[in-house]
Image (cartoon, rainbow, N blue to C red; front, side):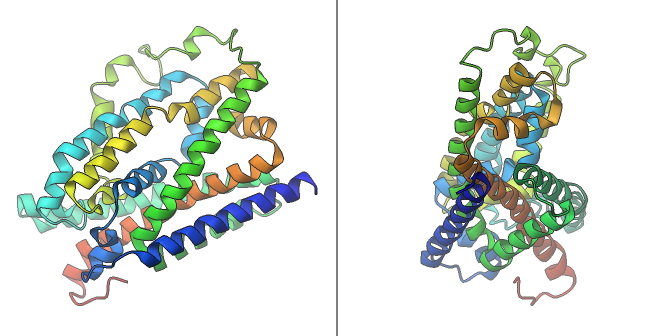
Length: 356
């Protein structure tokens, strides 16, 4: 059996396995009588491992893995370390309020606390515009480019991106947040395992010797001219993390779907702990690639994976990358649907609309 066939066979088998496991778990779950809560918040029934898994994989996608490794320096690891602060604010400040006011969307808190439905709708529109014109296109494009280069596909990028979009639509439309969170968790476990495998194989390729890599590539203290000046760590970056992890519907929705505040907090703590080791997957391999190839930017990770992984593991890794892309896409799609339905369509167009 040639290498290409092995790659494709492993890829298809693992992708199908995740889909079957997701279908089995979702089929056994209890459903809520509240249609919007059941579809957009998994009936309020997510256990903490699914909260943690979905938080992580919604955040991690091809553009992050490729882009952060493309920096080829440890300084960008602060984006992962700093996430823990945003997650703790979500756990101790925002999650209790979301549950207290029984919010379906993060923007609903604005109306509940401030009594201003217009502000809620305005912020929802801003989120929707950002999702449609920034997040969704970037996720689909980077995922398609990565798959095209990894499998040397002849298909145009737009066709591959359309296939991703179709797969994400099926998950989001027929399974709701529960299917998304469950598949996220299975894919997340696989991505962690495969990501660490890439790091280990890469270290073996340089014989576990990283001497010769310039000191500035290892530094965690950014100069005023660097991408992350040191003084931004406790100023601008902190507020970005609080916004992203605490109020961004695509992220906070997972914590709002837990069985209880305590269950949500446990999932958030687990996600925060994992974020501290994620640099081993999304940052460190880029530094190893610098040792092997020099400063080659965003192609570093794809080239490293292609060179160090055996064919059967390449297929498994591709399946996990597809899972990460689909996770980010369908998570954004479900969150956008929740914002539009609950904040705009039901109050302004049809109060009796079926959320599905």
